[in-house]
Length: 247
Image (cartoon, rainbow, N blue to C red; front, top):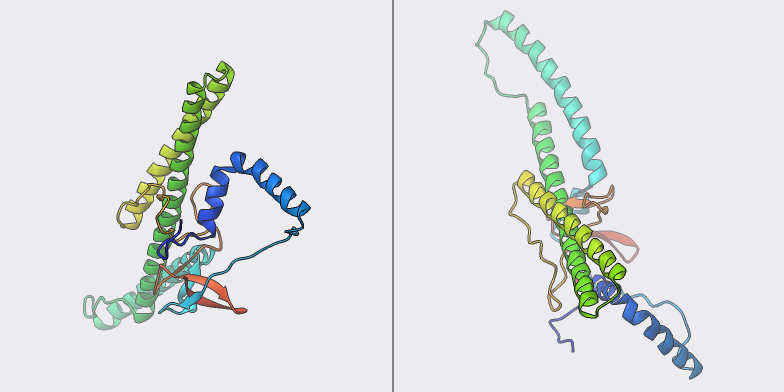
C-alpha cells in the first residue's frame, strides 16, 4: 500500500516490471483478454507526467557532455595562443623596461579562460562520476538477481546444464559489477567528490536523480550538468524548456 510519502516514479515501475517480467508477461496477457471480452478495456497508450518546478538556476548555465569536450579543446587552443602572445610581450617588455621590472600576473583575458576551463573540467569529471555510480548500482543489482536465480535452480534440483549456465551468468554479472564498482570509485576520486553509494535502492526508497548514460557508465553526448545547480535538470514543460525539478 502506498502512503503520501511513497511516490514511485516511472523508472521504479519500469524496474519492477523488468525484474518480474517472466512472471508478469503471461498473467498480463490473460488479464487483458478477460477484460477485452467483458468490454471493459480497449488497447491504447496512457502517459503520466509530473509537475515541473523551476530551479534557482538558469538553463543557459547548463552544458552537455559533448559541449564540455568541445569547449575544453577550444579553450586549450585559445590559452596556448595567449600564452605564446604573453611570452612575446614579456620579451618586449624586458627589452624596454629591463628584466624583472614588470609584474608576473596573468592577463585578465587569459585568467578568465583558465578559470572557465577549470570549471568545465571539474563539471565534466563530476558528471562522469555520477553516471559511473549509476551504472555500478545497476550492475550490482543485476549480479544479485543472477545469483538468486542460480541458487533457486540448485534448490529446485534443476538439470546440471541449466545450473551450469546460470552459474556462468552469475559469475559474469559479478565480474561486471566489480569492474563497474572500481570504475565508479576511480571516477569519484578523479572528481574529488565523496565515494558514491553503490547499493541499489531499497523498495521503499525515493528514486535517485538519473542522468542519461551509456551502458559502460560514461555520459552520453546530451547528458547535461548545470554549473549553478548541478542537481537540477533541463526538462520540457508546456512547450518550452526550464531548468528545474520534477516533483
